[in-house]
Image 1: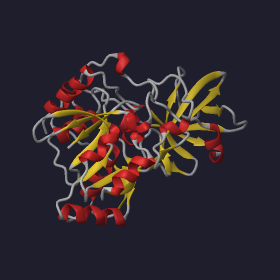
Image 2: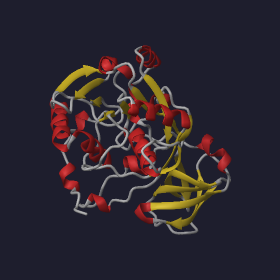
Image 3: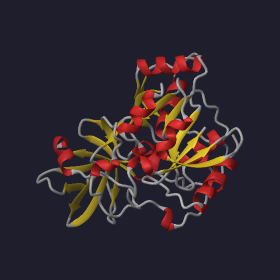
Length: 341
């Protein structure tokens, strides 16, 4: 297999275009519409999204909810930060640990705010991942904080702003950010147009925010994220594909889940899915389900930038990114949006 050069997915973004906080109401963000058929780019507002939807379209939303996954603790008087990644079994989690101190098996961390609550390192894994055992997992939701991207340095006045309005099932350590633009009113308007809104669950993990640090991106480890897609959703998607109606994913997390589900089964039809999604999508990938995508603007050299380039073509995506920067679009989690049709 030929190499996939990470450097081919690099670009330079000025700091003033990185959205530090929500700067507008949810549905007032800007929307760059990227047309794959003619290569055109159109500038709209997010509340104009229904103009690009047709009766019979199927929208796939990720209803995962961000958990309080960020913790602070101490060991021998030294401060340590812990970020939960995924639960392996009761009380046992994969985590990232931020510490100047060398992390070793047996290290015990006293969790801030919870007298007597400790996290003990029981295994060291690659890519900086550690496995810890919590002495009292039940109190973690009370002690943790909602993790925000590292470029956001001040807490949100309203932590719910980092949740989608349709979030339901807890399990993510980062928000499925394309969904942050929706309001209940906009969802009702979309449904009234005859568009089906379906919900799947993918608990966002390390895949979303871990940068690619090797030149051949195919050597980049893809960390599985747990997801579910039920029988109703699989049936509706199969019917839409059979009738040549569009399946439009809201966010790259929804893409990864439906494409992982499609490739996990035998036969042409999508089956219900519950398991670990680990599909690496990059240029040359043949999509089985996704016809269009709503997404935010992604970090350079990221697997998410590779994913959108797989759908729209790298040349068109980089044309769109250059136009977005020229027009002062906001990038990343609380930034503006792109609709690829």
